[in-house]
Image (tube, one colour):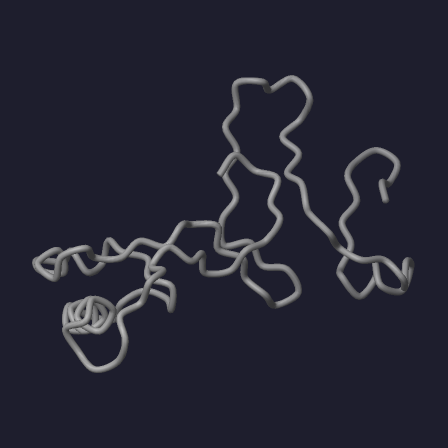
Length: 119
């Protein structure tokens, strides 16, 4: 839905009233037509209150990786660690060193969205 002289900017409520049966199946990022060398990355995209995080999950493969601030470099499936202890506990739990059954899949992506970016 374009407007004369420039791009359209509508709220989701306005789009729902104009196109009540519309369904969002993907989104795109427009950087113009003469920018072939641009690299576009989209992350933490907020659509109608839902944030889509396209970063792959990363977790410690050794509890020592949690030390010296290392816990801040990981992106586990349930969100970022709050401290070193939480990182170590997650590692122990998911690798059979704590209570519960070890996880078999530590590579699940936090929240998938259909993105049209280069990420």
